[in-house]
Image (cartoon, rainbow, N blue to C red; front, side, top):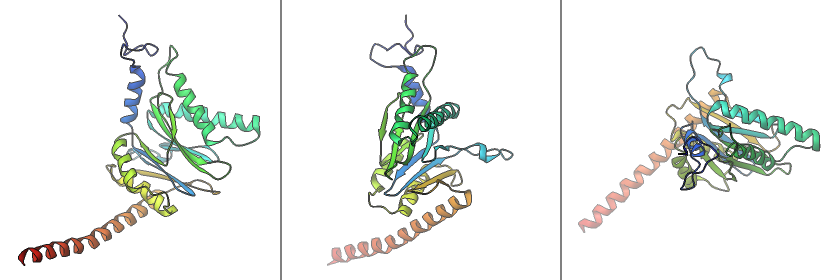
Amino acid sequence: MPRYDRAITVFSPDGHLFQVEYAIEAVRKGATAVGVRGRDVIVLGVEKKSIAKLQDPRTVRKIVQVDDHICLTFAGLTADARVLVNRARVECQSYRLDVEDAPSLEYVTRFIAKLQQKYTHEGGVRPFGVATLIVGFDSDGTPRLYQTDPSGTWSEWKANSIGRNSKLVREFLEKNYRDDATADDTVKLAVRTLLEVVESKKNIEVTIMRRGQPMQFLEDAQVEALVAQIEHEKEEAEAKAKPTRLTTTTTTSSTGGH
């Protein structure tokens, strides 16, 4: 009797490839990653795991550079992501040698998605337990944000999340994303979104890409300052809202007395 949950190339009677679904489940258990696209800025934010006291934090990066104009983050198995990133970097260099031009974001996304899909139907391999968010600017300065998943599906987004609590995070982004947001508001939205789900405010990694500028990997002190600013603005907004609620309640009570 076929074991549908073990054989990667065999469909179950109801049309499922269980190994692919298990890989998607590995992504759901991965650290939360968020991507937000603005008019002239793109922000990637991830929840990073706490590191050991003696461990070098530079060796535990969840946001990596693929090419001069392309950045990537992932959720899922880190070792699988390393293989995908290395293959993507080699492809970018090969493209530059062959075409003498930088590859577009869509080209790199298609390459990664094609590689992921290839590992869903060949014998002797297993799917990559990784979903990716790929961001950058095309040659004409257009900001792009793409997502790929273990099945090899890819799509373009204005803002998206992968990993743990991705559905909850995506709902928060849908409520708060604005097409006309400034660059600073876009950065704050990415950090605010992560603060909704992270266990510790210190476990946040943020990278900012601006049109025509090199990537900016924020230091821990810069992230902490940004978090403090966001919390201060939140407290001010709540303080302003309290008198309004009190006035409304008083007015209602007076009306009821008459």
